[in-house]
Amino acid sequence: METIAPLWLWATFGGIVLVSLFIDFVVLKKQGSHDIGVKEAAIWSLVWVALSFLFNGLFWWAVRDTTGSVEIANTKSLEFLTGYLIEKSLAVDNIFVFLLIFTYFAVPSQFQKRVLMIGIIGAIVLRTVMILIGGWLLAEFHWILYVFGAFLILTGIKMWWAAGKEPNLDDNPALKLLRKLIPVSKNYDGEKFWTVENGKKIATPLFMVICLIALTDVIFAVDSIPAIFAITSDPFIVLTSNVFAILGLRAMYFLLAAVANKFHLLNYGLAVILIFIGTKMCLIDYYKIPVAVSLGVVMGILALTMLLSMRASKSETRG
Image 1 (cartoon, helix red, strand yellow):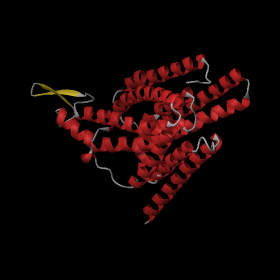
Image 2: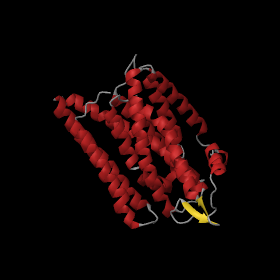
Image 3: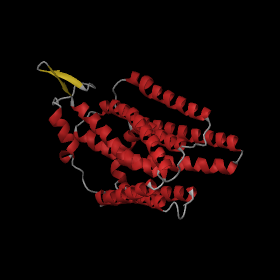
């Protein structure tokens, strides 16, 4: 797997991730369990987005310095931006599922922060492994591109079909299996995953939540990682755009949870994006859609669905 990124940039990326996690886990942990309001979530969301753009600027400078070409630097920077936007967009659907899980288990809002923090670390580790495996497979077996592309198209069609329908966790096979295998208490015990009842150590509902969150991320990683490989095969761009999208996931969850009902058409837009990316992947050997065009299409679809969602919400309110 070849990458255009110099070794020092890999080290810088690793350092940024470690410092970010330190701030998120150690510094913010001192705040204790507390409700995260829209203002706090919006501020942190802007911080993570700004950090991602600053890193992209550093990446642009590093590529230009390494290759001596502004054109190559522009192309690679656009690939990062497009990949980041795609991963951020698909994370929205992930967040709606998180919201469903938290609502189903009636998780107090002050406990949700810890679950999401643990989920972020799991997501980073999982996606790193999957990206490395995916990159190796693409390097060894080019035809897998077509498999990934067809999978994304089918996933997009399925997402379109399921959009607007109310999901039901009662029928979730993973949840049924967990309940059969692990005894679970009826009540929460603070932020603990395990508690003691009648002298026996049993799981709390929060443990069930973290298991379902982990399973959800596995499912969404299977969708999102092939999508970014349609934009670039550079493992550095694939990994960094994924990780930076994930780092801001917790703040974005609390922000979107407050306005989720205003963007009820967004899943239709995400479905179209997946179909577009899948088609782009299937056509890659016949016609390579420019990165700038892909970025424009993704941004246009997101803007249109968000606008239509807000208009529909206003119409319902007036009605």
